[in-house]
Image (tube, rainbow over all chains, first blue to last red; front, side, top):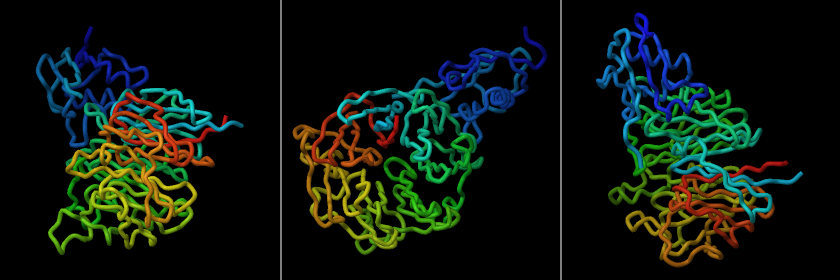
Length: 92
Length: 359
């Protein structure tokens, strides 16, 4: 059940594993992706630095999808939006 | 109480810890730090806290910390960032702990300090604001601050090594810095211009024990010694099989003894000369050199050893250790005379440091 300004966020396990007690799926109130990440950082201090660099921007190998579309920090969020945070397919 | 030697072995796929009570049998634990690429791990000599610095291609730079000898870990990068608009930091390359302070050298090259055991970090702007900063050019591994030495007698005196920029020194705890590269050759500049103020490709520096003012340097272009805190360097490469290599390790008590692992050359594959492994030792401050080969592989060896991947312990006789880019770890319990392979099949070894534990 989502309320006004509340979005549903899913985090990848590889990110959640870095923070004790972090949830993989949660609801959070935010009007932009930047606000959403602020909310994550308030719950689990340091999470912003894992998702964003100091540009500031979403890290190059992290993708944030909002309602199926790739988002930026400034992307607005509608109430009830579906947000997925993914690590990019990369490595070696 | 029994002494236990712990080896902190940073690799490109996490940190491993080896420990031994007799330096013959070793137990391997890891990988720690969620298999992040770790460039350097140290232990605070005061309390045994282990710190591991690195950077993850997804999640950026951080310093990991364990206060229970590696059993549990946390990480932080609070404040470990350049200002908005500057090139973001990608990874931590080097760590040093002294007098309750923790320092981190990072990429792009800069220096950060934590005074709360790695929870929060602050940019030491003095180095980044040096007038030569616009002229700093990256080396092959990037613009990295990879060597970080602190005078054990005076924590305000520090030396850093930046590829391919050179050595800088501070006397005032990082407020002001000056280049310390006089006498260091740069073979990649035109004749007559090979001794600039900066632009030398330092690969590692080591602070001699028990002789203030003496440091050693392995450079991209030669091996060097200084006896005046780096104001002037002299070449000590005569007698070595090449002028190229990465790590340098000093004797824990004798300032005249240094160990190097020369490689065949920067354009020749960067493996041990003649595909035959040796650690080279001087006991007269670089005048003469001896190859130490007993127990090391002597045929078809194509590994190299990275800049932070050789270390000593402080026992008597002291142990000497190095890790290879092909994932082997070699150890000597008799100051380099005899060697054995104590771990194989690790990821690429970035650094080796030691920790003595009483239990």
